[in-house]
Length: 602
Ligand SMILES: [Zn+2]
Image (cartoon, rainbow, N blue to C red; front, side, top):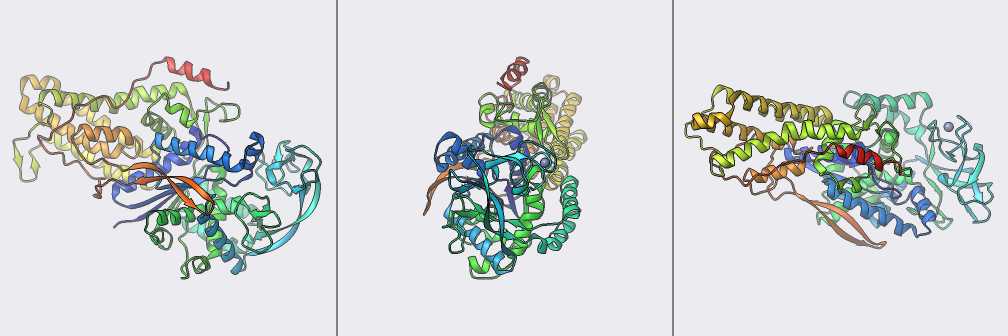
């Protein structure tokens, strides 16, 4: 049965370059799972976009003395280039600064208001008399009144993780400089306490298949603190306007934590509109059978396991009523496979200290599959992991090149040379296909079982284990070749060598598909060497979309022309015409370790 799979990936802030920690945290695992489901023949929609409204973005613009719009577009364009280079195949990567996202966010706001989950309340906020405005969260820093950390933001402490009351901050100082005073301001709040029982039930229903650290943190936090009302508007003039008369005019906008997650709903709607299938998004959103996966880093767990489901459950059927005129509930998340953090050479990654491996920069020196391989075997699925350049070199040379790359290269070059550029011809056909020897049949059974075993791991989003399983199968083919030794067999008995090489080609052809979600570039190359015409995957492309806010650029995905599911064992024909093979991967020199370490922290 075909499933509708929504791959929803955390929206990056437009204030920093994406580094390998971000890639292994969300974009890459999302892409691997999306590619797997596409190969299976499922209907996949993979979405995200640039979070262009948060204070990190306005602060970056203030620092550079540039308009916010210019700053967000600069980072956004860089993201699109990075995803294309890394093969991160978004069906739509858009931004939060679109007319569609505004409308969807506003309908969500109104639905929650209609259902009685919003209220207004006055509070004290830091005000700058010199710039005549309230200063939102990150614009004011001071000492945390809970843990004593000196660099706390006025609304949150990054050291102890607590939400702070701005007026209690010790020694507050403005990031803009100048004096500060407390003034009263009014905001809309989402009454999360009313939704707490629904959120708990939602989490308990998913406890069996969600990752232990994710479910543990989410339920633990609710048990310990309960869900408290949170403001969903704030004093800032950049962001989604509030759909209540007078509020936007008063210099207030919808709070970014509330609207950025709504992108998981607005992006599918935008994708439908620009694809000319206006109602297609309903297949993922107004469909209780659809499965939503949220790929995020551990700092975002609570927003996705508790606040986003609360928004969806609170809006209920009212959202569609306001937005489209019918009244159906929206689909809730299925799984939130959040990753822990990746460090770099034993230290926390820091873009500002240049203690980072940036996604675009590193692609100028290494192939994307070598990077994807290392980030997958090292993915911080259950605990923090570490990018270590010596380990990168060893994994590339001893695993990717030695086990898989050399296997492919040896077999393909040998077949190409000794069988005139074709797969060996198997004369002895039996009714159920070529007449394999027991050793051949054993190998193929082992490798073909990978579609089941690796597939099971991919469906459960255990990607390290899935890739480990695939590598074991490649090792099994190497062992088979050690036993059969076609390199000497060919001189004594070419018919026997034909069986061996044909079997090995079939195994490699199946493994190509099993490796494809992880290593799409080399699998596509191998697919071509094996003589196929239609590619395994579709392709990414950039498009401009115009709306009342102007023009924004999006990344899209054009599916492969061949709609047949490809997650299936090889049926490579005897005598199939091959193409001139070449190496899939590059062996790296030991010197890269020193060179790369020297780049860090400078
Ligand atoms: Zn603190």
